[in-house]
Image (cartoon, rainbow, N blue to C red; front, side, top):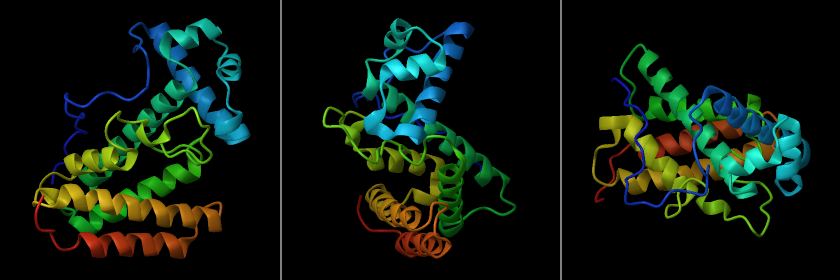
Length: 223
């Protein structure tokens, strides 16, 4: 199977509170990425509650006014970082699906998705605090459930993109809901795995794969 590129959310859905504008010029793009890198690094040091736009700008060596040209504030920074995390995950997953020696089935696709998430959790700065919009400690002013999409919650938005990458694997009626349920299950078990072990408890990671594989093995009815 040739993996399909990550599909954008339908145009009818409102965008999340991410970047105010996407930079076009190379210098602006570099500043934009430095701000997101600084945000990710600071999350590992001070967590979500301790994160400030002032410190992000200082760490990125960017004027605070430039930060606010790109982002509305702290929530905008987190939303843009969550979007970048998701794009990196989907790109890496698509490459792994394409590189598979045999056509991946649902079980193999599930394993690849879990393995890629775990790899990012272990190595990517800030990912342990903010993966695809699931923040560890959420300040009251931030709507963490809708960092990726103003209408869909974060897991539903990720499930939509996974269905697009899976292509005909998840074309059967019912997979739209099933993938969302699978995301909620995997999210809960993987959180437990990384609470039990900073590198992710191997037994719990294996159980996460088994749980999701079993649930998605039979095409669900309805849509």
